[in-house]
Length: 154
Image (spheres, rainbow, N blue to C red):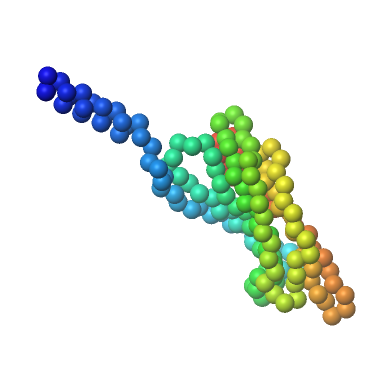
């Protein structure tokens, strides 16, 4: 009887440990960066940041940031979209979206920003205004973060 109880207890512990998913999955941050050079020597650096986890959940969160740099390499302004997605190998869907936009130089300001989600896309748009010697000039940038049916962000 005692031997049967011990064997049952051991088998139960083995089954429970095999089926348990850790409460806090190990998370690593991944980034991908591209640079677009403009005719005036300025450039836009776009970076996708996402989190890889070892959990079995079919969700993915990440962000995509576009930063506007002058030809001296100084950051002028940026816009970021943050998105959370679900995916199942066949389809994917954006479940939440938010945005941020910032000006880093005194000659720039953020005029407006907005965000939206549609299907597998999280989107943010910002309009930045550059103060010139005479007047000002607006620049608008839209950043789209997509999720594939397999949870790959682009």
